[in-house]
Image 1 (cartoon, one colour):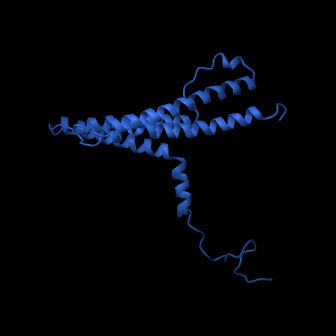
Image 2: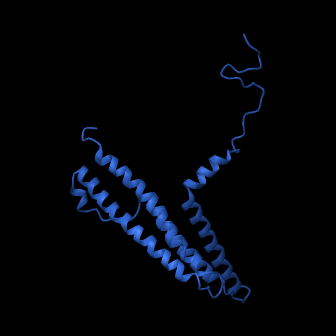
Image 3: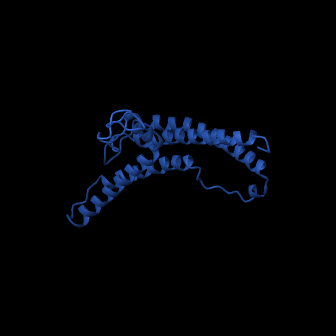
Length: 186
């Protein structure tokens, strides 16, 4: 029928090497990074904190020459990790909530209550974003004492995390609204 070199399924030759699994298309990598941006930022910040604190301990107790910058760097990394971690918790819908009374409601009532809570949280995050921009603007003139970096960069974690949380919460709210609008029998 055909050549002995061709595969019955497609036009690939039997003797040709299979595509390497480690070569990913750049767009696939970009999609993965965009989908995991909070995890990547938190992992980098945790590594910065570990290296910073470890170098501070090593220099202080082994070399007997304390460094002035590790404490400040680890503190700023902790601030960023706190707010980006909050966005990560919003992404995974794993923020702490008290649902004792809501658990007694029927399913449709629980979804309605979740919609009400999410709507109020979205309003809060919009206000938080607006106010955090003002904080960033006012702190842009300050400089940190040890690292000599602009304090606006430190406070930039506030509006960034509020935008990320808003996006994740809005996605969860749309999903809840679809569940609420679905007919009871479906």
